[in-house]
Image (cartoon, rainbow, N blue to C red; front, side, top):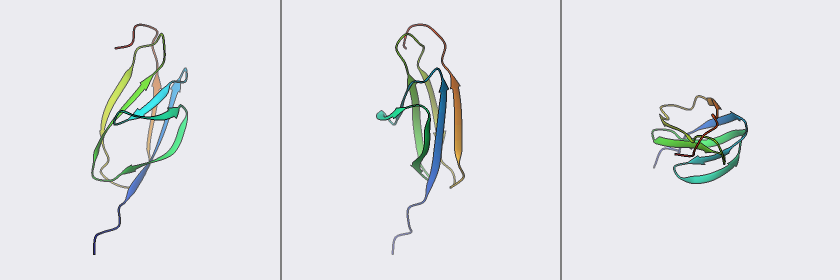
Length: 79
């Protein structure tokens, strides 16, 4: 019997708001609350907004604890 898949809730906020992508898939505009991430996997977070630099972060979801991120988006070209 396979172990039940465990998840960790992700909350992401940004100033100003931007669009959150998880592993390249659009999730929606920040703030995002309680987005379920699979435990035991590495995920790539990306927040984009026109006229601002893209924020990227790679995180390892090591357990079911809540993950919270707050990003300040800086004006500039998207990269």
